[in-house]
Length: 397
Image 1 (cartoon, rainbow, N blue to C red):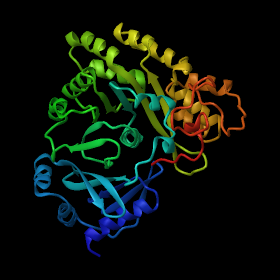
Image 2 (cartoon, rainbow, N blue to C red):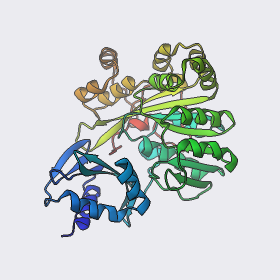
Image 3 (tube, rainbow, N blue to C red):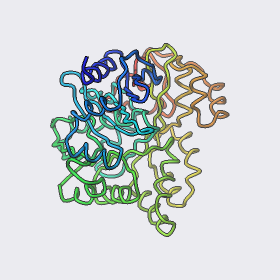
Image 4 (tube, rainbow, N blue to C red):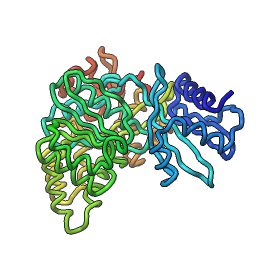
């Protein structure tokens, strides 16, 4: 069997078994597939570094091969027609070329499918401002953002511009006009794209990753000039997200950034994935921060350490903490106590929430989630059950 067929075989195998990632380790000739968060060694015919490079580079454009040879790193995207798209990364380890692939399904899951928090439905209706999706690598940020962009695409006659590295989920024009720009192919940098995007008459802008000071500054500026801007950061909670944005700037600019952020921030959704107790994949737990006047004031006054208290008590504003969400998942039997406690931000607070938790019955089939009291209206086009984002059945890679 040719190596190219072998690579394609394992990519197909990953999709078939519901995996999320495939790793090719050429120094040992091993292949690994990540399923439900765990890596599994797959039986594979041994392959060598030179063969692997030759076959893998057949999938790349000449300029991509040159970039890898110069930088020893490369992000790219490929497609197996009729199966799936894949985000790939080639890197070098001890002189050997390695590769990792992430499965990017053709079908974009809806916000309802993913059971995103109620505040997310409010965020996409805003005419302007900055919405941040955060979480550790592999926590489903891209999937959630794609669902939100897809919702806007299907319901709003607007111009959406995305800047990604590489393009993952492909959006086809529906009610909206969508232009997706890929780093390296369509623009040289996130910062470059954001400098010129304001001349492209956008309504909604998606920044695939806010990596550096210039990109963050331009994203805030785009929000300030009347656009709805979505971005991602690798932070674990809402408070850390605000601090990260401010701290990336020099000290003499931080107060100005706090002022800009306090005015333009719409909200933050932080998410992480936990193993389901029934073994049927993983479920997302969310923390939601809504930029209320109280939150804006704390950002402006450099008192972000107090925001956590507002999140915990902000149910009427559709806010809830990650620990509150995980305690509810444990209460419903979707996630084990041990799994949730291992991911808790504050184990002591998590214990208190578990001890306070009481089952809530109801004909709708599920208890009201934290941060979404009975007085909260069901978001437009959301599932008919309050707290649907916590219902069993949501599986994620």
